[in-house]
Length: 191
Image 1 (cartoon, rainbow, N blue to C red):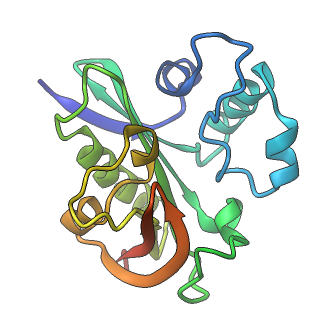
Image 2 (tube, rainbow, N blue to C red):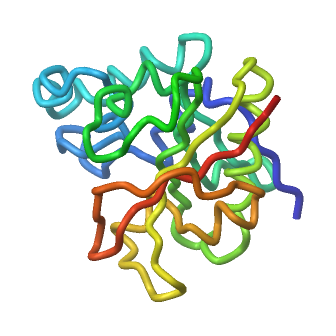
Image 3 (cartoon, one colour):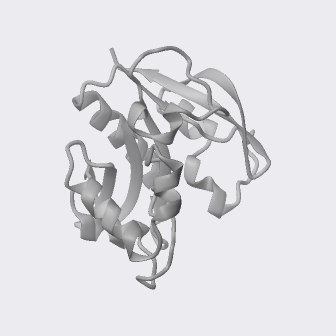
């Protein structure tokens, strides 16, 4: 089976991975970190969240990358310049330096396609996407779980090992904790 990762310009495909079963549900839609303003994030409820993502998909660059297996969308990774996200002002996840880095912060693989290496392909695709858009470096903020199991609902940030396998190195500790595990800043230089 062939796996292809490409920019998330198709809103119907993004909705297939991130959207709720009920259109009026107020699910994340991967906006919690993508929007710089927490006020905007809180103000968007129900269908307005999906509408905002549809707007983001029409921008250059779009809000992330999608993985396709034999033409079917199977996964998502959020990746964008850190300056355009809430990580720009996040007090728990420090800036390593003033470099205009990109951030990759959310992975989602559709049920029935998990544990098949899709998250690894999404991270590789996110790195390529950032590189193609001139990013000098890319960061992730995964949990440092030491190989222990991470609850599926909190695994969206990835694990330190996932990032290490892709060549990222630890750049800083954080004061952020998710699912009982500390998060770490992992960075890959793209210059």
